[in-house]
Amino acid sequence: MSSNNTKNVDFAATDSDRHLSSTPKKKVKEAVTAIEQDWSDQGAPFPSQTFSPPQLLWFPFLWMVTKESIQALNNKNIFASIFWIIYESYIVFDHIPFLFTNSVYKSPRFNFTYISTIAFWGFEAIASIVSTQSLVAAPNVLLYNAVPHCFFIVANNFRGVAASKAFVVEQKKMSWVSLQVIVDSLIHCTSLFYHLKYILSSHPGILQIEIADASHWLCWGALMVSMLLLTYMVHKEEMKWSYFFAPFLGSMIETKNKYEIGETKKSVY
Image: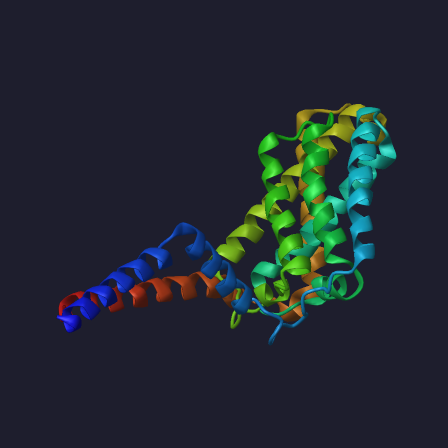
């Protein structure tokens, strides 16, 4: 009799454990813990930046830059326009090689070494706010870019996540990481176009010609080609087409292996 009761208690405890392990809150906690372990500083090209209280000063600074930039652009301040055109051009220069490399190449190596990640990713976040909420009038969909970069700041500076692992295929350069960089780059390219369009429309004397819609596209295309050529010249020793396909092929192989394992388990049972 006591043996049966023990069995019933054991079964009840097992069911209870299963219920607890399946709760959404616990699943989220386990997923976050797994991500933090996978993206820990161990083996990272650059460790996560240790947070210090003075770094909090970056947040009011970024807010001030956002506010003043929007106001200056709305007042057709040419220097504000030039600043953001240079900035967006640099981000294109900086981001494109990510898709064709398997290391922390020259540009991000400089950024990780000398620039606070709060400042770097913070500027990427506010760039979309400035271009959409000012008279530059970029589409509001570009505001999406503020979300992942705020996440990067929290993860890298407050949760000990080493973002530099994302640059290496053997570690964490997966297909979703590459897709995010592609989306990020497209957003910056779009912002660059709208900044160029705005400055050429607001200050038509810059080119000393009558501004037409074709001029906006020609200037944007010329600047894009210039940035692509410049970043290729700087990073060509580290860039290969095989690195572009590696994350996507790796994800396909991983999906195929999971499918085959699942089919094998089904046939066994």
